[in-house]
Structure formats: structure tokens, C-alpha cells
Amino acid sequence: MKMSKIVRTQANFLYPFILIFGFYIIAHGHLTPGGGFQGGAVIATGIALIAVAYKYNDIKKWLKKTRLTATEGIGLLAFIITAICGFGTSFFYNWLANSGLLFGDRVPYGINPGYLNTGGVLPIMNLAVGIEVLGGLGVIIVYMLSYVKEVK
Amino acid sequence: MRNALVAISLLIVFASLVYIAVNPGDFGGQTGEHLVFGEPKHTDMDDYFIHHGQNQSAANNIVTSIVFDYRGYDTLGEASVLFAAVLGAGLVLRALRRDKK
Amino acid sequence: MLFNIPFIAVIIIISIGIYAMLYKRNLIKIVIALDLIESGVNLFLVSLGYRNGGIAPIYSNAPSTKMVLPTPQALTLTSIVIGVATTAMLLSFCMVIYRHYGTLDARKIRRLRE
Image (cartoon, rainbow over the protein chains, first blue to last red):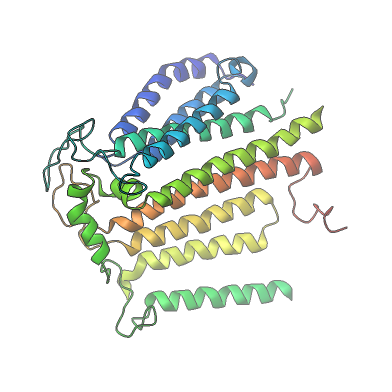
């Protein structure tokens, strides 16, 4: 079932904005409401929009299941490796916070406008979990769509 | 008959839950503990997180610093559950394709 | 007490979920009932941690520093993601059952009982 041309054009128009909004939510997870799970779910809705607007056989070329599964595995692996890097003190130790390195600025106590270069390992873990959730929900959508019987 | 029994037990459960929620009696087995909306009782841990979370994990969002820093094991288990559920759904749906052929 | 209205809403939502689980025969409706119960539990967790006049525990441009409890919110986040995972799993089971039996009625799926 392919949707009409109006729906397909609007889906093409909206898809990059949904992607940008999802990555914005992931990247600002330590400053504003949101985080890895929510941003990944938003990006998965973009994938669902494209998958509904087009026929599955047409988008099978660039929306491969193996690629999405690999994305999910890479996200989980990055999450665990980031946690293991803190083994000098303990598992899941925030080894980048207040260190002056990447994301290592000291945050002023109390109410502040929010600076992006803070948070230690939290932005990295947000990105890893966001990639994992995007892959997981996307592969669920694609799996369920690919086994729906075509109504002639 | 069976439907009536199920309906009566459902009503009993509903009434007792409403009684617990409305009655200003003992809550949690301790005398003087009332379940009141808007006034949580034991908040030592959460006050510690609110006051020290900005210094210790250097993030403005306290919820994120709890999810990924203080309680990272929960998040690890959650990510593993998501991974396992996706794996299971894929395996179950792959059986469909085997039947179709 | 009248101010415990959120808890009463939780109880009503969970009761509707249990009713639908017990009385409905369609598997999709049973999955929806499970999601209703899960939503009730999430609302219960969030409303347990509410503090009168509190704001979300985020310091970026916050209007005040009186904040609600952050731990129930973090655990609710965990619960929501696990709920999504279980719902996807159950719906894929429903797809396989429909393909095998041609129906979603729980009374007609009786190959296990014979």
C-alpha cells in the first residue's frame, strides 16, 4: 500500500526536521527535559513515518534490518564500554566530571542558564542509549511491517 | 455465577484500594504515617540528590544524573531488557516467514 | 481526604485494566489492558514523589529551587521503556497467533488444551 503523493511529499519534508529534533533532545539531555530514550523514540517515529508513507518493498533497500540491529548493538556496547572506563573507582563512575577534558567543565551551583560542555559521561551515555533505542524501536517497526500480509 | 463472583471480587478490591487511598489512617504499617498527595514523608535521599547532584555529576538535569550515574545499574538492566525484547520479537516473527515458504 | 484525587485516579485506571483483562476475550484488548495497568503504576509512582508547588528537578533557568523528588521520576523512565519492550513482544506474539489460528479470540485458541 503506497500512500498518495501529498502524504509522501509531506513525509519527505518532515523527516529531516524530526531527525534534527530527536538529536537535539539527545544532545541536550543533561540540560533540558529529555534524554536518550525520549530522543531515540522521536527518531523512531520518523522512521515509522517514512515506513508508513511508502510501500515496504520500495524502502527495503535503504532501511535494512541488519543495519538497524547493528546500530542497536553498537549503542549498547558503547554504553557498557563507557561504564567500564570508570573502573579505577567503580563501575559507572563519572570519570569525566569536573576533569577539564571533554564535557568536563565545572557547573556553577544553583540556577544557571545551562552550559553544554558539562556533565561528564552523561552526554556520552545519552548518545549511546539514544542510538540503541533508535535501533531497537526502528527494527521492531520494520519487523512488524515486513510480515504484514499485503491486501490486494 | 462465575461472572458474578469475579465482579464481586473486583468490587471488593476496588473498594479496599479506595479506602486505603482516602482513609487518613496508618500507611505502610507505621502509626502516624498518612498517605497525602503533595507531602512525601521520607525525602532524605532525594534531598541529597537535589543538593549534591550538581557538584558530583556536573549536570543540571538531576533525573539524568540519577538515571545514568547514581543508578546506572538500573539503566544497564533496562537497556538489556530492551535488547532482549527486540531479539525475541525478531525471532518470533522470523517463524512467520518460515511458515510462509 | 479530598486531596488524594490522583491516587483515586490511579485506582480507577488500574481497576479498568483488571476488568478488561478479566472480561475481554480479544488478545489485542488484553494487551491494551496491560498497558492501562502499567500507565496506572507510572502515574502512582510520579504522584508519590510530588511536592506541593515543586518544579521539575532541572536547574536550567529554573524559577525556584523547590523541586519534586527525582528518584521516582527516574524509575518511571525505566518502567516506561520496559513497558514499550514488553508491548512490542506481546504484539509480535499476537501476530504469530493470528497467522497460525486465523483468529484472536482467546476461547478459540485451544490447541494447547486438547
